[in-house]
Length: 200
Image 1: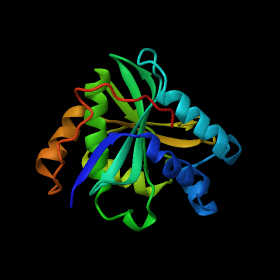
Image 2 (image 1 turned 180 degrees about the vertical axis):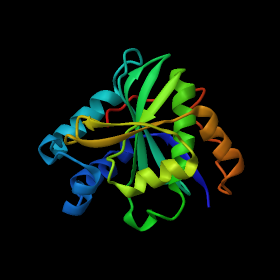
Image 3 (image 1 turned 180 degrees about the horizontal axis):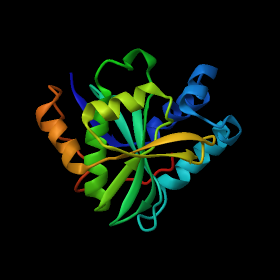
Image 4 (image 1 turned 60 degrees about the horizontal axis):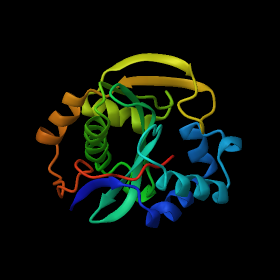
């Protein structure tokens, strides 16, 4: 099995949109999605296409596709990007049948390391909804420290809720990839080429 990450491309836009607009009520509640803040399919497509065509400088959000044997199965997005300094990472497994199978930690760590490299960041945080067990277990399993809990929004699509803030330490992600997974990355990192910028 080959797990890899790459920039979300034009051919992935339909899957991205279908994921957000196909969430069940239970998933909406678990993720803490503010349904009135989710854009329409047309608006989402327009925003994504605009970001694909945007210049590199001043990017605030970026999306990596999670791939299994070349098929896109989810994504990580980096938001609130301050190049050379900071970003906030989010994770979404599109396919329900692959959740809880152990692929998420590897894909998340690949994403974090690539985000650090691409934007020369000093720090990344992740703020899942405090009572959403899946991402909290994933982050704890990898070993990222929980640094605080707050009430707020984790993104523009989120409701106000209790959030757990984790420090996504680059060294911990790299250590996990080296020592705690048997999956093999195919080497197709985003490093070293001009990747398209997307808004998630």
